[in-house]
Amino acid sequence: MHLLSTGIRGLDVMLGGGIPRGHMVAVVGQYGTGKTTLGLHFIYEGLKNGERGVIISFDEDEESVIQTAESFGMHFSDFQDQIVVMRLEAEDVKRSLERVESEVKMLVDDIMPSRMLIDSISVLETLYDDAGRYRMLARVRSLVKSSGVTAILTSECDRTNPFSSKYGIIEYVSDGLISLRIIRESELEEAILAIEVVKMRRMNHSRRPRPYSITSSGIEVFEEAEIM
Image (tube, rainbow, N blue to C red; front, side, top):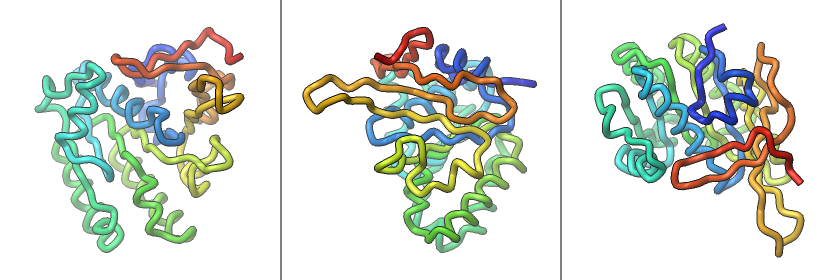
């Protein structure tokens, strides 16, 4: 099985080597846990290895995405011929999902990327009811699978359950689920960031949560440390 590094060594260890090629993986967490940063690590690792990547953003334009990456030492500007950032308006996608699907498919066919980041799918999910969300996510999965890319989708977590996405659907159509959460025993104590591989099909991965930090170099996972 061919595995793709996430660009985060400790997370690769937890995964058992990386993400299987062709997988669609959801990264779920609340605001400030580094979901986008994790996805940028994944794309940047591919760029450094000579791969091409696509970022589909519902939050930020291309300049903002590049600036965010650069702030963590990921020099996307050095790989302009390998990376495409596409900003989509969620309302436009809902109005004409088939047209947007066709445009994304044409882009993928043109540049032939191996990695994709969709950030954040929750923005699009808010426009649908439960049945519509499932149909939309199933079409996203179909697009990813038919394109042959390995994809990370970021999603807000449920307010009461950090292991579940906001609407509880994306984890069922994804091949993997990585949870990012904030642990705080009391309001007066310093928060601990915890990462856990909840699900990864066909992988014998670690199921223990591990602490991580977000630094000027991005995410660092302490795969041998325990959460106290």
